[in-house]
Length: 457
Image 1 (tube, helix red, strand yellow):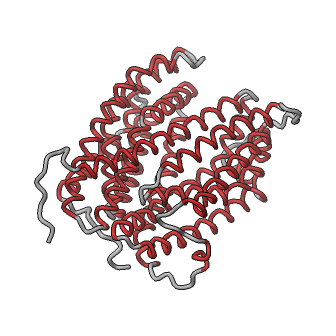
Image 2 (cartoon, helix red, strand yellow):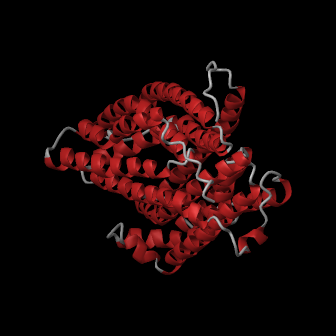
Image 3 (cartoon, rainbow, N blue to C red):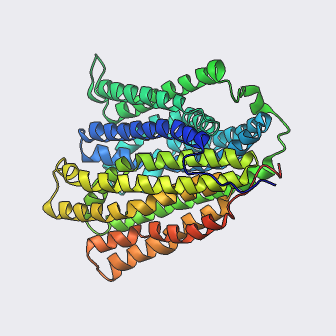
């Protein structure tokens, strides 16, 4: 039996080396993805409100696919990280094959929806014929990149579970540059191209997906030397780990999907409380995404480190590292809070919105600055430690129920029934971060989250 560890906080050099080696490239990747999103919004926004709305709503189909992608990948990566801790590369191939197959089916279905039912999909979100037409012309092109995007994204996430993270930074850097360049050409008609508007934006996105896919494929075939996955494994008949895969991954898929629907419901509550609140929430969300880059990088790094440690059978070391990760999350939360309070006024100065909306946004940013401490804990403890440790059912239970039983009811009640001031309504919509911390902390302390999900494989 493994002896209980007694060491100083900084004695585990392997832990700190692995943490920063994984966390920093992921944080850089998230920063680049933030840049891609901002660039798209700014460039399409120059076309007009109808075009911007059409593209935003058309991306909802991709958002739903992204939820499935993240859910399947995260569930599979729990197994991959633990198998890597055991040195069982053969089982990693089997997990990757199952995820590739599931994503292929999902991507084909979503591509068919985008190609043949684009207007019907857009009609779910808006009644404006102009917005539907604009969004449909975008969706019919951009959906052609769904399949290769799923392949490239999962490949990078699976490699992250074995400590290979720099390839993601390279891929998204190239994607950012190509996306901006092709947007400039095809949206506005430069270098001899006709001005294609939203169709040009879709072509640029699709071409950037091709670039991502090409880099990942070449890396897997020529340079990757840990997993060495080959596509003949995709057609393997006997995998033998389906039961463990479903048991581990299904809660994560359900978690992400229901959470996504809940997030859309929260957006609907906000949208029906006035344009000023909607504008303020949009600006606040951008700043939250920016200051939380380090937090999300830490959460992803935590899942890899804990998964590898549990998979190697060092359960007490996993618990010891979990404590270090929670402390780091609190430090990152304080950094995010400081950045939020420092950057809120410069951020607001970039937008030409009403004084009422600016007042709402200023109050909301102050509120969330306090909540960043809880968000940082939840990201590292729930998505990192507990999910990486194999406790996927508990994570799904807390994550889904907190938004559906706390955020949505309190937000609707305070905003649409009681008519509370907007800042208080925003606090009600975000207070699930506090609840998740209070529910998760006892389980983290007791160590019940340590589950070697590879044993039954």
